[in-house]
Image (cartoon, rainbow, N blue to C red; front, side, top):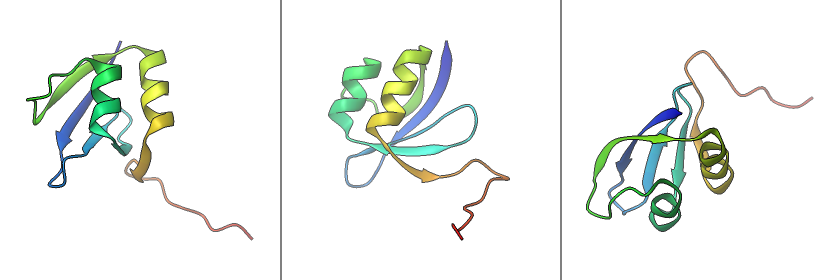
Length: 75
């Protein structure tokens, strides 16, 4: 099991952060379908399986790399 933390944004979408420190933005309906988190939840932590985490990250947009990582331009 993996633990992710999440919080609802001002516009109603969900930002979640993995244990590695990467932060993603995802549609709240898709997030709830995968995690089973309540519609009333504004922030918290959730346990997900490795498969659920892969599904979440595939459906989400990466918005912040983990600390210590950086974007490297292609040459």
